[in-house]
Length: 340
Image (cartoon, rainbow, N blue to C red; front, side, top):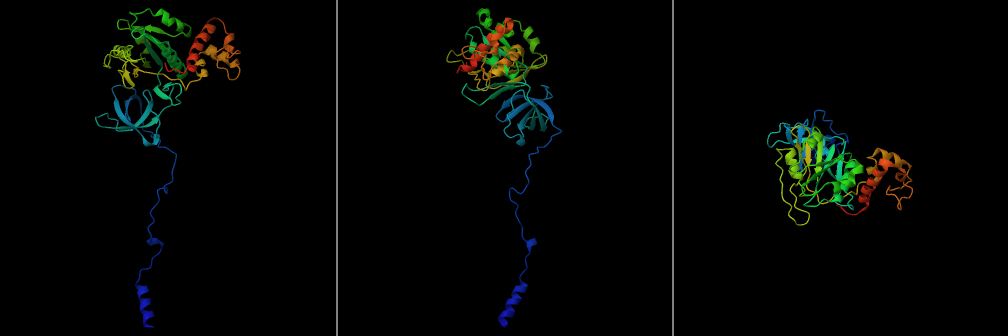
């Protein structure tokens, strides 16, 4: 009996626990997930002018005198952001040294210049966004002009919504007529932009717009940029004579034109793959050809006989016929497994 009494007394002295005494640690998934992103109604609009290792140079309101450095906001994930993109930014917008804003929004692109590493690479690389024109810079000599690059750049421009312009350097070393004759029926503007050539016409054409430049290393592209933007101070260099020349620009950058607008200088390219472009993308750039191919049979490549004996482009005449012939030359570049 005494033992039982002592046991009951011990139990009565023990603390009685209930559920309010138990602390439950919330799990990692206890917070409800949402796909709703912050609205960022206070975001300020800007344009990306440079990209460097996870940091983006942005000018607010397109004003070159309001530059900031920004990072990509976490909610954007791996969303690609390239030179020319119009973005919304928040955070420290003072532009002071060591400050960092956040890019929280990337607006839809009106035009896109894309390339792939080669014609077998399915991964697209966006070179420039929202450019109105593409200046294809080609030297008439030293190094000699390469038709393949021009054809491929034209294809990329037409497919991406840019208006191409052929810019020829070193015109004092060779006659441009023979090289440019093959592009006559494409209504492609051609300008001489060598060291001693007047750039007034070109400057008037590109002022108040965004213009991208591409070209092989050593053709005088950086020299042209320095003439268009005297404060650019872009590196120039001589062609090494080995391989395809040495690159003198390493990344795309948008530079402000003195009269308004931007020039986007891109690195000297070694290849321009077109794996991402179809024949329809090219034909769509020409209203007369686009209307004609509506009558083509399904699966037509628009290359003409013998591959496409019933291609509607064969029924055109006059200038449209000549343009169709020129465009077929561009389409042939899509079928050749070469990146030049």
